[in-house]
Image 1: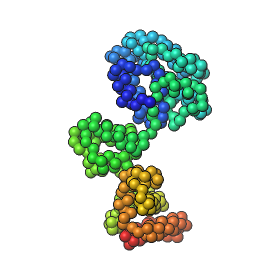
Image 2 (image 1 turned 45 degrees about the horizontal axis):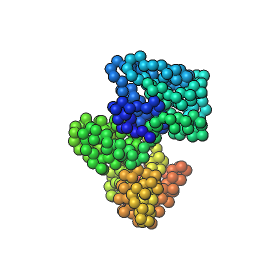
Image 3 (image 1 turned 30 degrees about the vertical axis):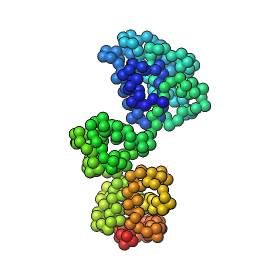
Image 4 (image 1 turned 120 degrees about the vertical axis):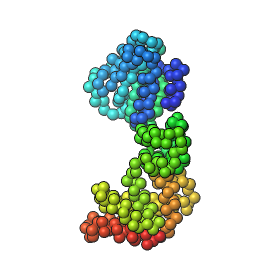
Length: 340
């Protein structure tokens, strides 16, 4: 396996391999790898020695013939083959007439003056296929799978250091909670934060100010206000969401989901689970689990069970038109606050 940093090191040391396979659905990693290959030429070489083919549009043998052609200027040629769907189990809907045998022969004996890069932006390859086995054996594989929380956090910290920023732990967790492991979004927001802070420290307050809130953030704030007895603020948040055209039943579902997380955190904490274990078990972001843990301490197990039943009743009341939907939400918020 070759990371992006390792690939850049190979380029710098002029030690590129003849075959690379970029496999996975994380588009930012794919783009970063392709940019690294594209930027590896000396001035004036790229126009003559860099070719990109789309398997859906061009015969694969055309890319192979190009790869076998000596570089016109410079010491190497780079050939990119995108959308290599033939490596998966999906139906091949390409418009071109492909000769895969020519590509298989090339894999076995690639020329040393060309770097052939195959891009397979798919969740998984068909490991049963002979050509997949051969390619994974002969090529250097650049994984482009979506990152886990810990991997995304490590990536985030590395990129902030590259920008001469110091990011506080809570700031990093909040950023990941809002954006997830979407590297393109993370990079965009880091660059925006860098322009704002210069070479300073990124705090939680900085992220709250600069990174757009999500619907989940508003729901969490609403629940947090209820938990802390700030009914007026909770109702104001609810009215703001209604003004943004969110349906009362959607808001109810999200409030219900947050309290189910709170209940889950309380139960698993009682069994001795740690924060990461709880987050994994409940399939939520670790930062969300941490904050839900703080809220859980405000309620008894009995109160939380009552609330979950009450949410089901409110859902039924909304769907059957028993009462005005907004009024149901207002009463629910007041009821929850009385249980603190």
